[in-house]
Image (tube, rainbow, N blue to C red; front, side, top):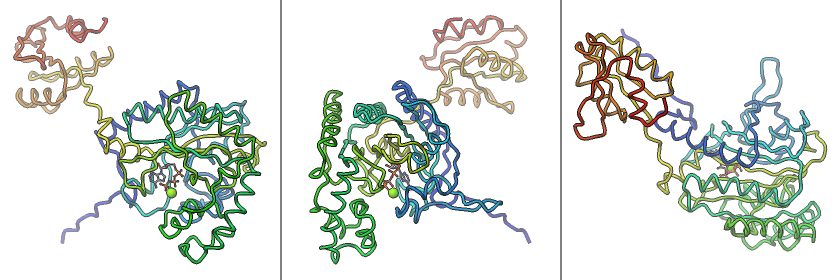
Length: 425
Ligand code: ATP
Ligand code: MG
C-alpha cells in the first residue's frame, strides 16, 4: 500500500509571504525606513522573545497579556514570551543600555498574539514603529505623528484620518478615573458581562471595549478632556498648534484613551475608512511617561507608534494604491548555442550593476524569447551558433516595434548595453 505523506501547511493565523507580494512588502518597508531615517530615527532590533515580565509587568489585566500572549518555558524552565508588541521591548532595551537622550529609534518585524484570525487580524503579524525617548517636549509628539502621517501619504493613502486625544497628566488621570468608575458603576447592569469586572479594577479599559452593549454606555460617559489640568491643557494645545502648522488634518476623539496606566498626554490613531471597523486601526500611538520606570529604568518620558503592516497594505488594496512594483529585470540573455555565453554574460552584467537573467535547461529559441518578454526586460542579448562562431552578440530591443537587431562584437556587449540603458560606463 502506498502511504501519502502529509502536506504541512502554515499554522492558523500565519501566512507565507510569496512573490510578488514580497516585493511590495520590501517596497513598503523601504518607504517606512526612508521616512523614519529622514526624521533622525535609527534602527533598533530587539529579540523576538523576552522574559515574560517585560510584557506582563506593564500589561497586567489587558487582553494582549492576559489572553493573547504566546508564553512558554524554555528548556531551563525560564518563563518566556513571544513579543506581542514593540514598545515594551524598546523600553526594556533603553533601561538596560541607558543610551543618551533623546533616543530616537525605529523598529520593524513580527509580533505574536493568539487572537481569532480574520481579515487584518493574524497570530503572527508585522509592525513598523518608532519611539522617541527622553523628552517631554510636545513638539516631539508632533514629530512622531508627522512620521506616521508621511508614511501613509507616501503609500498613497487618502482615507486614513487622524484622531487624537489627551490623557493628561497623572493628576488628570486619577480624577477622571474616579469619575468614570462612578458613572460606569451606576450603569453596571447595561454593560457587557465580559467587561464588567474591569469597571472596578481598570475603568479606562472599559472605554477600549468594542462590545456593542458596553459601547452604548461608554458613549455618554464623562470625557477626559473635562479633567485636564492647566499643564496638560498647555501640552495638548501645543500639539494641536503643531499639527495645524504642518497641515496635518486631525479630529479630536474624546473617547480615545489607552487603558494602560503609563500612558499620559497625547494619544492618537489613524483609522482607515475603507476597512471594516473591527480591523480599521492602521496605526496607534501615544505618550508613555511612566513606562520606563515600570521596567526598572530612571523616570523617562517617551512617545511612539506602532503601525500594522498587513493593515496598511489592506488599506492600500481598498484604496487601490501602492501596487506591487513591477519586475526590474533590465536584460535577458537568450543562448541557443551551448549556454556558456548566457552563464558568462549574465555574470558580467550583474557585476556591473545591471539586473540580468536567463533561462536554463537548453530551451528552444521560442521558449527563451517568451521568457525574455515575460521578464519585462528592455533588452534581449541573443547568442546562436553563428554568433558563437563569430564571437558576437545580437541585441534586440524588446519594447520597440520589431526593432532591428544590431550585432556587436562580444567584448563590446557591456558598453553597448550600458549605452542603450542610458547608464554611465
Ligand atoms: P486592535 O484594536 O485592532 O486589536 P490593538 O489596539 O490591539 O489593535 P496595538 O497594540 O495598538 O493594536 O498595535 C498596533 C497596530 O498593530 C494596530 O493598530 C494594528 O494595525 C496592528 N495589529 C494589532 N494586532 C494585530 C493583529 N492581530 N493582526 C494584524 N495587525 C494587528
Ligand atoms: Mg487588539
